[in-house]
Length: 137
Length: 74
Image 1 (cartoon, rainbow over the protein chains, first blue to last red):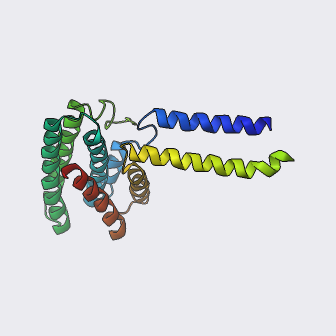
Image 2 (image 1 turned 45 degrees about the vertical axis):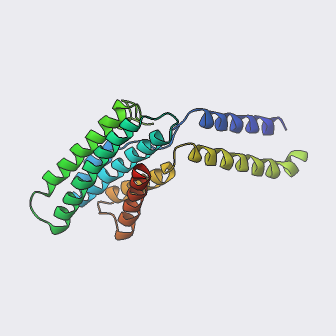
Image 3 (image 1 turned 60 degrees about the vertical axis):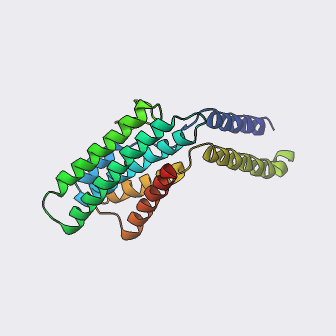
């Protein structure tokens, strides 16, 4: 019974920590995946960048749902997101067509994602250490 | 003896509590986090295997992004 009580206490503590720390162990940003994917193909690199972009959107939506979030900040984040969407569409079209310059389009996507990340950091939706190499929310 | 009888019941209750806690976290603002984690595993596996995502995997990634964008712009 003693070991059972210890097990229950340990699990309860684990749950308490998870509830108390928002974002604890949710997912990590993986810029290393983008570098590895670039060695596979432009499409693989594009998908890896898209994954990181999707993770940033999770943070953007978490911020949007926060009570008292700034509408002007949300508008700025939305504008940055629109920039990523346009860049992604153009890059995917270039990669699918196999035309030269796909890498350049991919760099434009990465830059647009960086702008979105900067906006999230500016408005407190993302910590500086998150979304960068080794950053784990 | 009592521990052997009640342990499965206690374990079941603990698992239910864990599920409730996770659901609460998901509702509190981390919607999409589970899918992001799953997609990370998918992309990492593909990269490790030196291949592109399959059409199905890419569709799942795009659906995730579109769902998040819809929430952001709603």
